[in-house]
Image 1: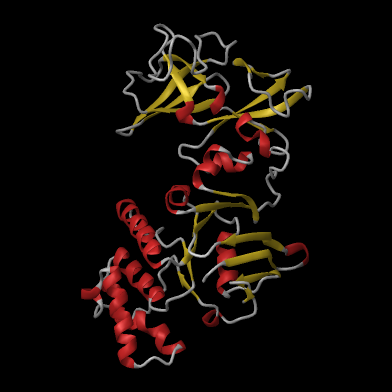
Image 2: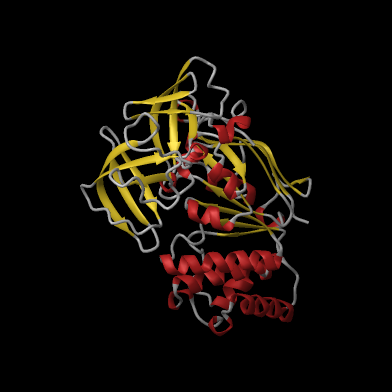
Length: 400
């Protein structure tokens, strides 16, 4: 068993005027065998959280429990956890075999033969059997990472703690290692807490993701829940690439008002009947329908009935007249930067549109893809998240 509980974890550095709250009242449960990714920007507290769980930092307050038993005061070697660092942390003067065997020699009573068997078994899993006599300086980044992972595997821990282990690898190798790590975790069925600043890693690897900002937990859910139903503006902007577009608007009597357009909502929100309210409209780049203002439609998902929310140019129906400022073909997707006057938005499409820089286009949006956020607190108000609006945390508040 390896259920991990983080209960009210707070970690501060310094005191008085110099006090810095790195993690603030964080509560989180990782189920036995679950792969949870902890994601957020640099300085949000994710690595500090991992170090507190590992025992490398002492929490200011709160508890760490493994299978219901408090491990907060235990030494790292006695917690039943194994950590893989961003820098790999391999001993340069030791061979790959000795690096993998070192922890077993220091913390167990296993015989030389038993240690040899465990190391070679882990090396077979990591496909580095022919590298065991090599020192780290002769290994590539990917090979060093495999050694570091093998060192963690041989300990047969209840919990894997991974601190941005792929960030030093090139893009192609990082993509391949993501797949291998997921396969390895599923085969070993070990509870895993994985820290990353890369939201693509978080989305593709975790059973669930936990989003941190400024030491506060913003949302916990499956990758698709956090993508389609963000609980606040921070999560909406951080999860997804290219990131969500935001426009400051006013919501009045069920109509969204912006300088470039108006949009009447058919689905009420808890804010629709609250008079006039300052809101932020969010729309993902792939959800902006690109329409040829002359022909009436270049996006295959748009049709003459307006089912996609696009009924034609003009701005009174939620469409926006725009100028294309940048075209970025990436192969399967083309990304456009579009100027709607006072603001630049990002649109993307898998269609092969013959649109050049400087072209005048019209874009629209389907109501089911529109997200609304309270402009002051950042809490979600959009129809897709209306049921969570009352409890959605503002940026800087905590939630589990």
